[in-house]
Image 1: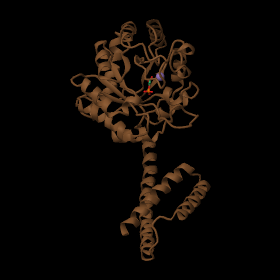
Image 2: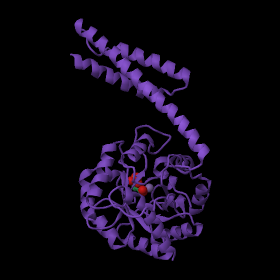
Image 3: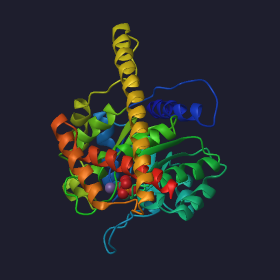
Image 4: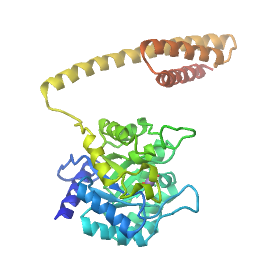
Length: 373
Ligand code: PEP
Ligand code: MN
């Protein structure tokens, strides 16, 4: 009974994707708050079952995850229990009723995972970067009705992430979701993988029907920041969370610093404030509409001002051309940046924003001037 209910919940959740992307059908949107939880790795039949039972007891997960094949940065560590652990996962599913999820990286993994009735397959961050691998996985999935989650590539490349979605869609898979697990960076200490929220936000714009879930465990690399990152993703209208949970994190064979016990997971989830993307309250709607109108007006003003600025840049370009002066003058560029950062600081805009904004304006100015040469 419970198993049927979990499965239905999962199907409803994915209807969101089905309706908006390829498939048609009744609109069962709004299964939000999907929680995928479970250990980083399936280490033994006992560890997996114990974790699954505790998750079921605490009542805080919809899907049980466990890594069977583990992509490790260095060789020699625990690389997953391999195919035999699929039977453990199936057993845990039978005992608890949880639909199951695991990472696949090859066509053989797909075949093996399917033969053990794994409900959800996810493509890991190190696989999404490789179109050859994604294509082999897509080919192996063809003709199945599998649910597939695609993690962001380790590097912040929107096109690579989008390309992976397209390859999986082209193999006829409708039930696709995205997992945001952060991006590798050099020398960052706050996060294991920096979130770069603007990238998943852009993916939501490009693929409006595809559910996005956050994996705060791999973003944080620790347990302290799990709540903050989870809440932030919910505030950004994500559809669910994937959180690593282990019955005994201190003894975990992989990712021990970032795993929480099922009981800790329960209190973490309890703290989260789930928000609605829309509200029908008239007062709220009226206020929102007024504020948005003001924003629209300002955006138009800003664009007109930028166009004016470009015109002047064009005049400067003409002047430079007449006098045989190079288009790019590094000292002027750094003067603009300095002035703008100072002004930005005075009015409370971050240095990062001013840098991104002024760089884009400057690139466009140079482009305008180059057109004249
Ligand atoms: C995982 O989920 O355990 C994992 C290896 O994730 P990622 O591909 O995000 O590193
Ligand atoms: Mn992990």
